[in-house]
Length: 166
Image 1 (cartoon, helix red, strand yellow):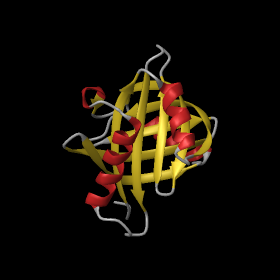
Image 2: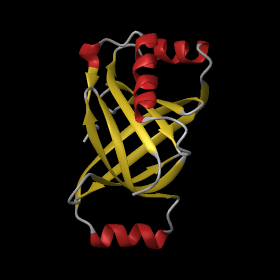
Image 3: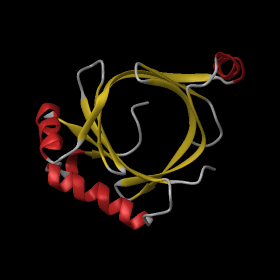
């Protein structure tokens, strides 16, 4: 397992454009817009995903564990910009179980990444990830960062959701 902590909180959004404006007003940096195509593969635990996006490609194997309305992430593999051979090996050795597509707008506050996702059916979601690569924050700190940002953005608890889009 990789040595970092990650806590995630997700919700449905009815007002993505308003939330984007509020994020900028709060001082978030707009990182960019990524058109993502995710393909998921069968694994015993967690999710194994190949992502092809306009901002990059990756292979990742991770598991999200529910902690109340939040999830903490255990990452087993995280290969950014894998080689063509690594991609071919994945497709040759693992069973495909599903796929998703989305347009993701990404914003950044120091160690907190905010994704505003739009699915092909027009549904909108927000995902907030508080990450720690240097053991600077406790898991409780990361949870508080997610919860506090959702409160500041006025996201109702009824809109919270767990797990991904697959």
